[in-house]
Image 1 (cartoon, one colour):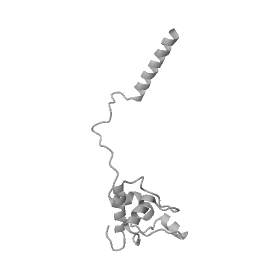
Image 2 (cartoon, helix red, strand yellow):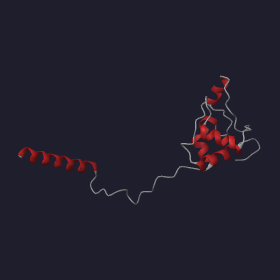
Image 3 (cartoon, helix red, strand yellow):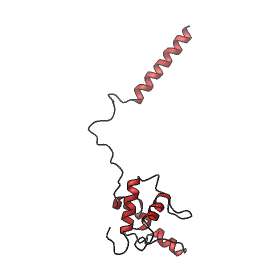
Image 4 (cartoon, helix red, strand yellow):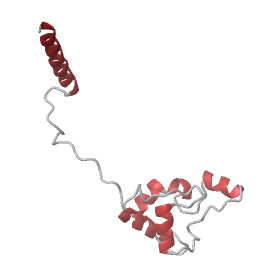
Length: 131
């Protein structure tokens, strides 16, 4: 009987200790004076800069280190300013990537709105167009 009582007291003390350590004193939830984190960008220029420019270059010409190495190896590295793919095909490429290439899929990383906006921005990079 004493052993069972001792075991129950020890378990209760352990639970109390864990609760005291896990929850900071006076914590009641998120502070109301903290701003929520910013929503992910969805505008074309920002999405392009954050997700595409590293490989395709700020101007879309693909003159990045990665692009130059790929071209030196005879691989197709697109100059987006000269691309002739349709808007639908550009959207498909952004969403699903290109098999066998370094172009990865973004459908799980970007919202439908962001994909549509970056597609429109990329099409605007074409020669003679102003994004």
